[in-house]
Image 1 (cartoon, rainbow, N blue to C red):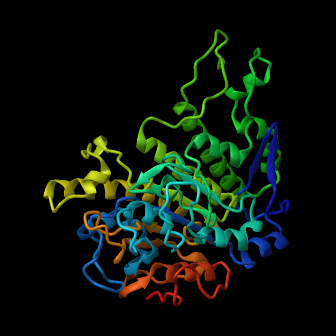
Image 2 (cartoon, one colour):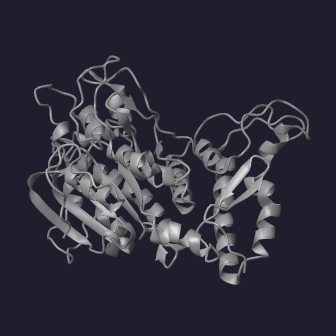
Length: 445
């Protein structure tokens, strides 16, 4: 059986398909990818407008708590689930700046900073935890970090009571004045991961335009078949499963593209930027992109915004057609709270879809979920109160064996959320003394 380097790729015209972990990886490569730090991935996911907390917060502490209604979406992964109560985002509070809780919670969620109230070019926030991680471990993967989301990023404009749209539509901040725009088009992310042909020009059936109809796997097929002949049965099966997943995602992206075809059956212009019109289809494709990025070790640091903070999107497909933001200002209306909980559950079900994928992939005897730590939550607790304490925060995954506890953990009032971020940085080898407004490492369990 041929020994492979961890960075082996399948190559073809304009294509570079990174391989998942295989048993045939050389001892030296295994040492780099497993013993080095058993690569731990970090994913930070934010949902906007707070959460309907009665259906989120467990009634009891410890490992034997009963899953509340919304968290039932993650019941399959309970042994890898930690729920935190009592964590606070002080930077999102007004501190004399008045209204603007949504913008502040978006800006502060991963920075812990209190953003400057401005809708001009003089934005000021803080570096985000993902970018601290990217600076420390980003050199170990092809992309130092990936910034993804379901809605576009803005760098200017007034989005919330005098706060710049940059605050409410960006999670990742390279420094206090430089937010990192997120990508929301699954096809663009796919092309970044697998190097598919770029913008093409008009032409006939043999021109570069025709390549838009071909799969990335078509280009790399010869290389893939050659490699499979040199692999053992288990690795061959694993490679087939991986390539099938890539092909499946690519096909679904293709079906979501709205191309106008010419007389020869080929696109009459380059594939336009765009996203699927069905929200759930779009979200699942973005979850697929995250799964493929982790599976190929393309990056170890990711951020994802389920929607921009203060999002007014409605969800008629689940019986909540009204604006999410408006519903979050429920005024104790039973109908609004019921619809808000439906939205919370719908979002968490998309997260569970990703968790199912990661838990099904083996990497050296552990699942990808075991090798990942995913933080999920919001910078607002109850959207009606706009409070930033007792935040809805959970973590899924075992961080490469560094987190083998699961349960519901309560902390003293006003415990900084940044204490958890500091703990996460330590798990990837960044021994920072503090981050944001942290005052200690969070003790889990």
